Image (cartoon, rainbow, N blue to C red):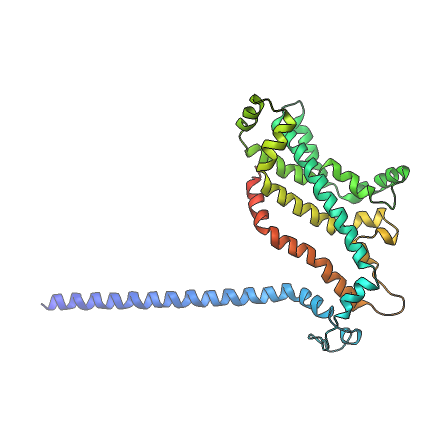
Length: 299
């Protein structure tokens, strides 16, 4: 009987110890989670600090902008900074130019990249792999290396200070877009092409009616990348565009000035406006970016 009581006491003690260990485990788990959230919040604030400064500065007056110590909350709020950006500095025209060039890049380069990628993925011809490697190698060349040669060519054609140097190259595709499309096309079964060819479809009709409609996620990813690349491009417009009427948003921000007063609050407002388009575009297409990159398996 004593042995039974002793075993019962031992079992009770073991159960109590197990409960205590489980409780301590939950406590340390919650403590670790709290510390994780604290660290993430602190790091997020550090990352968001420039953006918070940008937003508050765009709503300040000139006196508040240069105030020491820093006045974080504008009082009063200067909404007029955003109005002046469009009424006094022709920023609406710069936005229109950027949207036009970005839209052209999306349409022209998406189609041409998909067409080139279809050729690399579906047709067998001598030197196919070598040509594809050469296409990928162009991604390793900075634009600055070819600037002088391209400038001389465009100048001889009379294209300087026109949109043609920014638009015509889009007709020949984009190396990274070609890579994404090709990887996706390789994942599609060739039976689709064979069945369509039996029905009398030619190569272009197969591409247009059978293959292209199936690559919607990759097309959206490519379109977003091309739009953002054109929207934030400052180098090419700086080299080839000189007149104020042809300036894009990056050039408008670069030459944002007024000889009679400081325009830093207005510059912050213009910068915030320039950020709205890519932020909204990424927020809308985020799920397509994730699924599109996953579908275009990097193999």
